[in-house]
Image 1 (cartoon, protein in one colour):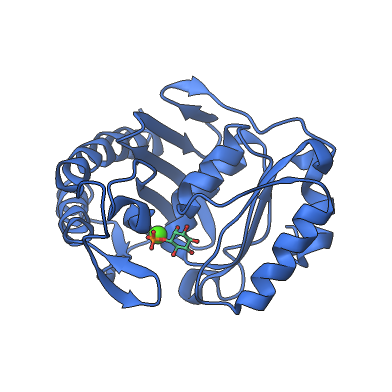
Image 2: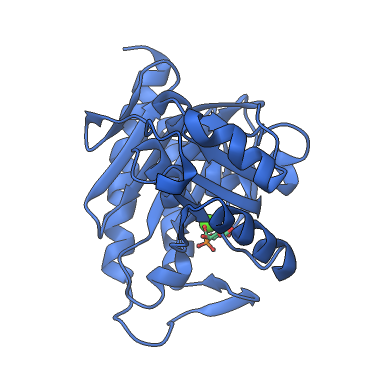
Length: 261
Ligand code: IPD
Ligand code: CA
């Protein structure tokens, strides 16, 4: 087994354990059980616990690798860097909704090498490594063959980091093209849905590395067209993202102004 396959194996096992830990800590439905780091930027007890678990286990398994987590920042340096979002979709998680996941990606400089996304309450594990194809619960996945946005579905992720007016303009463009609009509260799972052909594209005007690190590897292996997220400021300050089925990618790039790689 080569070094990347071994890392994918271990990452899948650890992300699934982390998912079970998150599930055991999920609040019941009701008002959010969480604190706010900023506007609509939620933090739960589980975020810290899951990140600490993954940081410790990865250090044990691959002491030479670096580590960066959403909650603790760049903890360790290394040629290969694990990038963790302990709970993506925290606004869902904090009020008992099943649409959340643990995201574990591995990057080398500006390349996404592998990614695992575990959505424990949905019973779903997305995984991919460079050159090895993308899977959902072990079965191969592929982006949709849609070519007409009027028959398509597009998720527009919202974050408080860009003005609402810019988001409204994006949504107007997507709906104006006749697409069905989605907004599910987890950027990572929205991107994974593109990889699985469940929707045709995911766009967001600004998103952070930990939200997308795992999904980028999965999308590339599933045949998506992508914006160059890891170029420019992406690794440090985040970037806009466009991930789309090839047949609608150019049209959505024109609508959003987000360039394709
Ligand atoms: C957020 C979610 C949301 C996306 C934001 C992210 P969090 O991450 O993925 O869907 O629109 O950009 O920050 O706070 O749930 O980990
Ligand atoms: Ca996130």
